[in-house]
Length: 181
Image 1 (cartoon, rainbow, N blue to C red):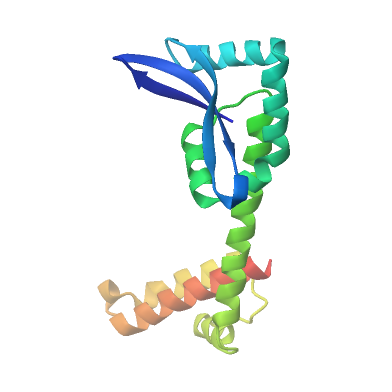
Image 2 (image 1 turned 120 degrees about the vertical axis):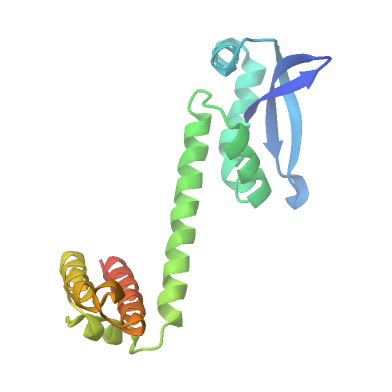
């Protein structure tokens, strides 16, 4: 469910919109016209008050909570919800949890894909460039990078190509160490 401000006849009207997904397509419909309020907080307070007293609105909120995972699996619906979402008696909290979990799963999938795309020797090459074993911690990687950067930096008479290789090795090694845990 979304709390949205709609411009109507040069006035700002607050409405509650339900998103649903019949036949795999995201649809929206206005469930409640709240009226004019000076800001989002006032409109949200009015919505929560009506939610507490209106059984039909509670039923719609319950339906939204039950179907939120399906609706928010759609990228456009998720973007719209993030743009207009409202905290409404725990409904948005459920959606926030769903969105955070989904984003975390997507991040982990990207990390797994990146790790799978690496040829077998890249982490060991990165660690060897830094002069470390593949079991080095992030602090050790950072310290080794700083020591070597001090020697190889072009402003201190070092070679630009060697510094570029060191930067790439540092990025790969630190990412690998974070991914490894």
